[in-house]
Image 1 (cartoon, rainbow, N blue to C red):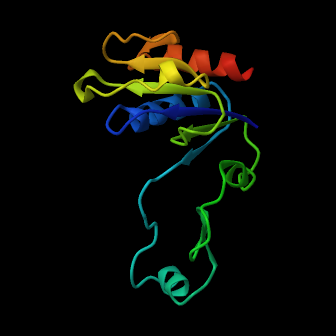
Image 2: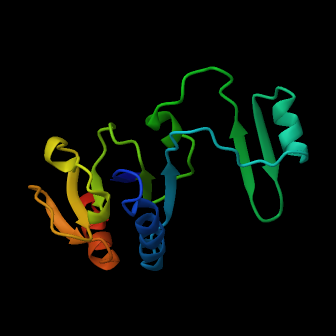
Image 3: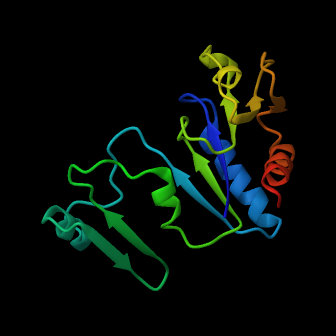
Length: 163
């Protein structure tokens, strides 16, 4: 599977761009899956539901299935967070996996940037960042895109991964 990532600091437009890219790339006939890294604890389950009760009782994994979807939840229970390669191996084969986060991993990436954040760009110091999508002018050696130019960004990503 081909992989390409979006990185950037908080509130720079990563999730909105991811959403638009998934829609655009799948509309072109490609299959896409996503991986999102969270820096905090999160829960996809709800207290009181059967699957939540199974997990809090101590189950290492809980698989929830219905006629519409299935989800597998794995509890680390103190173990280290799995490496990105381990998580990628859990996915069914698709044409492209878009990854949000995982700044320090070596896959090709595009950085998102918003002028209102007044943050520092990662791109000048990271050779795995191949482009920057921003809502303002930026100084970086990489190719630059308008953050809202989803079509051009999708073209770039598909070209970079060979699709």
